[in-house]
Image (tube, rainbow, N blue to C red; front, top):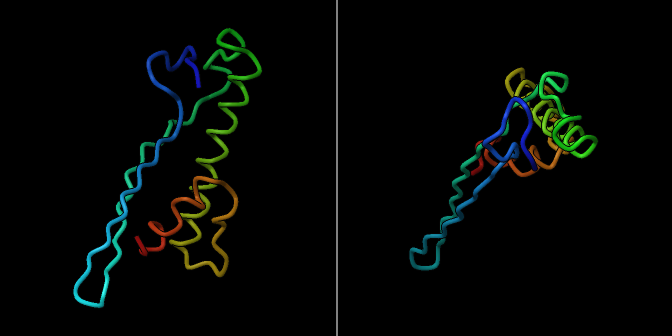
Length: 105
């Protein structure tokens, strides 16, 4: 991803690092997972002046970032309210964070 008028020095993308550990005790094994997430900030598409910083490609990046953040917000709200359906499949970000959001990581 590239820079915009609002964000000239950062990548404007999400970063997810997953560390999986397995501990063996005799015949038993314990699996643990640590997820470290750096989320891109949402952008006001007009204020970011995307047409000056790469045009349609930057616009599509901004839309994708905002969409994935909205999907994450919906998933968290659904979990918090005890909804019957949690929309994890709405974005790659929520699919990748599913185990952490459900307390299984």
